[in-house]
Length: 188
Image (tube, rainbow, N blue to C red):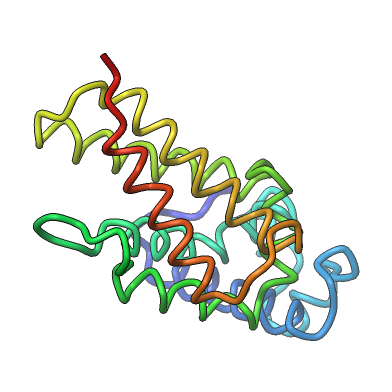
């Protein structure tokens, strides 16, 4: 049995499960969260959980999907000629807002940008960067889109894991300069 994609009841149930997971992960690491605890907190049955998600990791990635969308949007929240000294306010806000669920993000985004959330972030960011570079007629859209996605996912993950030091403001400025330089690198 599977949930119907457009069914509002299914959307409400997934929402309850996502909220329950985020609430649990605010109290304990993802590795300590059980499906039994989640379904009890969400007020749904265990079988209902499996109608919507294959396992706990699938729910966790789904619960963090908004973070991926926010990251992609934050990196593309500028118009005109980007100023390397001024990252978009959306990027500053995005990085500052990660703290409440940083433990969950660390569990899903491994150092270097791997892990299940890293894969989703890389795919979405690469697709958006490729699309925008292609529309602009910029050279080598495939190469630069891959480099942008890998750079952002890798630095973000390493920062969340404490491998790159700095507060969210400093990291936003550094990431922004890196990405601007990638876009400006002559490839001839």
